[in-house]
Length: 268
Image (cartoon, rainbow, N blue to C red; front, side, top):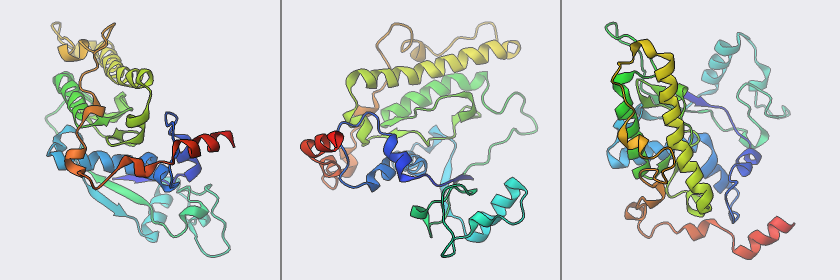
């Protein structure tokens, strides 16, 4: 189970560095950039597309009770009486407590996503992250995620369990304002970084686990075609046809202020 401490709205407002237009509603920053929401959007897309096999499975979310919040905090810290869990009137919530709750979060429960428990079986050897047998599938999974409109933005060793991605708290899922409005050069850099991060992750594995890697081991050809001097990055997340599911129910223009309003805000 992955539990999410609270984030301030100010933090979410600082994340959309590629946006050239401001949102009409400040809550939209939380909707699109809060880590819990980022994960939910990914798992919702995988569920809708019938491709939950592309990541460690998620079974839904839960909201912790105050008693559960207290038990978790005490288990982690070893402190039996954590005063800043209190939300009574007169107690200022300043983000310094265990769950980082601020006044804007008063009365809101801690959110958690219930995920598949991953462990090595008694007959399995090697590391829990991934092994040679997972490598080809790791690339195919990432490329397929891209084809489903998902840019992970967090490829590293600790984000894999048995060769499957486990964390999507930084992911952008189309429709996403950043995927829509990001300048072409910056977008290409992000896509290239994603595949290069996987390439270097596998090279590091090859170097560190050299004794367990067969002599004829090769990186996936599809991945190699996207690295080096190639401009290819595999499937483009921005090309995902999100309108096929949304229809006319959602118009991205409803999210943004007009260009003049955004310009005035940046001046002011």
